[in-house]
Image (cartoon, rainbow, N blue to C red):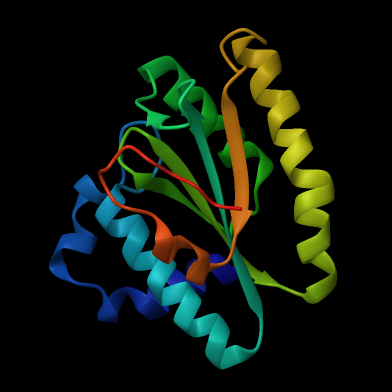
Length: 163
């Protein structure tokens, strides 16, 4: 219910592009532009409120460590797993269209941040691996980071490194 209220409340502040149906893809995820807008908004809101938010990123790499394009089945699977595994208040979308799926994990308290790393990440790996197979997911990466840690990522360069 609170997610509905938040969506209704924030509708007036969204740009026309945000309101279009194109911002939500066929596989149930926000497109890159909308997702980045939501990420920025949530990061600012969390700073003001004193709550925490984290960004969860799911992607595949090649042997050199560069992020690679997901095939459509893998993309649908990842988005479905994120949709079923995360809360309704979390935003799911493309951090880098077709390459890096993301989720903005909203309104976290300090104690739950530890649970994200110790429980959520391994659970997501296990679920995705069960659906796609160990061979396909051998270079699967799932990272949880803070907004400021994303600043070092070179957009569109095919490289992605978050420690």
